[in-house]
Image (cartoon, rainbow, N blue to C red; front, side):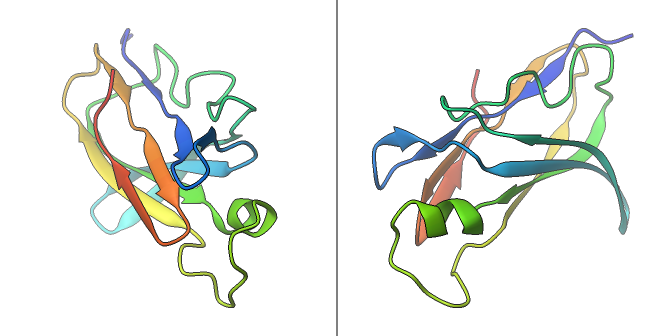
Length: 119
């Protein structure tokens, strides 16, 4: 059993606030197939209440987080548009050490985003 785990944090850089209420899905990716293994929603601090992938469940491999940002941006007062430029943001990444803590934050604005491997 591994001790590593996966967390995330979503910050609304346009408003300077944590992004609450964003639905996030985690997929394990193998070749051209994906398997959904978790789904959570960010809390008032822009984090999930528990690790998206807790200790004991992390394995080496490819993963994808999909942040469903459209409803959040619609509710945040961002300029309305149809379709929304960033309605869902996929971030595909690899886990090479199942014993490590991987933190994949999302820095979000209505027209751009960035991510990195945090701590």
